[in-house]
Length: 328
Image 1 (tube, one colour):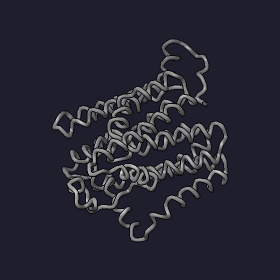
Image 2 (cartoon, helix red, strand yellow):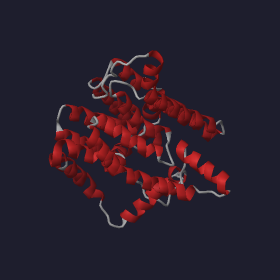
Image 3 (cartoon, one colour):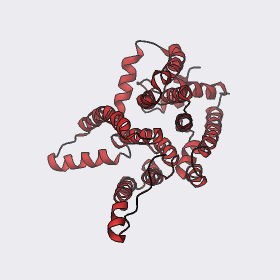
Image 4 (spheres, helix red, strand yellow):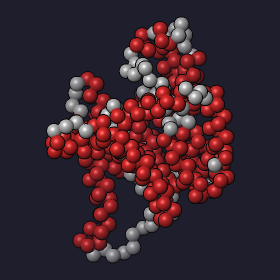
């Protein structure tokens, strides 16, 4: 019996599109498929067990990067628990690989960092954009290990006819899907009030173009300001989500992990993650918009406060002592 013959396949919301999950994700799904015994629940729980194990390893790696308080902010975060132990999303594996890359960069293990970033890109596509950050730090020796890993895992899936189908699947997230995307919704609403037209099919591709155009700028800023690798990854992935039309709650697990891996937690992402849990109420006809505006609006206020609070403190309290260094 093929999977197309099951009621599970009939429940998919985009049956005519190819999966955009890269090879490493597919291998984890295959492990779940091996456990299939006539009941899909068995494979489901096997997958969840795998991702819980991966998440536990990720917490161990995090203990090597930051303080106990920050580790607990991640390990006990309701969103992380729901999306890994509860939902079994691949972001658990993605977070582990990104944290491993941060650990490897801090210890100057270029080859290990290359493999970790390549592995992350083989779980979700977008981490491949982090590669140039490694190139600046380690040169080409941080390229070939990851390139070999990508080639080795991708060749069994290689098929020229799949490329246009995968592009079509990627386009879904820019032209059709939309969820929990505060900046996108704000621009869409303003344009609707201004023109009376629905600009969603234009805004999505435009935002994607803005993200792609921002990449060389972010690489240049990283080189100019000598960002930490963790900060560079957080800024790039954060920019991606700010300019996305779809930000499902589980997408935020990696930025929460990176956000607590430094000396100071990234409170805007922690706040957005907590509020994003409420967007699940959309599926039961519960309040949806209040969680979006509270999440994105609150994250913006927190980010602005963190940005301007040192200057306000010096102005109000007369505290002109040097601020602690942001370097890690």
